[in-house]
Image 1 (cartoon, one colour):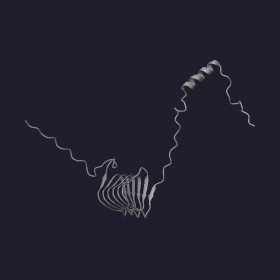
Image 2: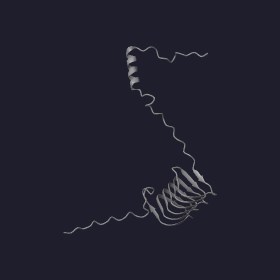
Image 3: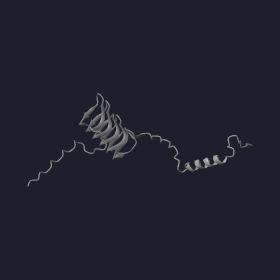
Length: 167
């Protein structure tokens, strides 16, 4: 039914062409050596903890989390959004933290945003912060270059004085 066309097939190679072709073939990587372009993985959707959900325990993910219910425990995520009707009692740590509801505990984030409906009772350690008019906040605010990796909540301890030795 179909016939193979020889239009695109190369003709017989001369001696020097054959040698050059063999050299190219030697340098050409094999299929196992070539890397196929990796297709970017689709970002998974945010995990949503609904308004009727109550969690007691810690939550840790590399993804995004939307809290609409009540959580008693620490939360660690990439993007953490505390919904308007949500309450979190524990430490919130994320690259981006958006508080629309209530947080009782420390908030740590590279970017922290308290919206006009936010209620925060605790310290905020951040790289950048935005507090909208109407937000309620009780605690201290401290800027750190890397708030996620720093475990101490307060200032760095003062260096100890060197002990004097006398003769």
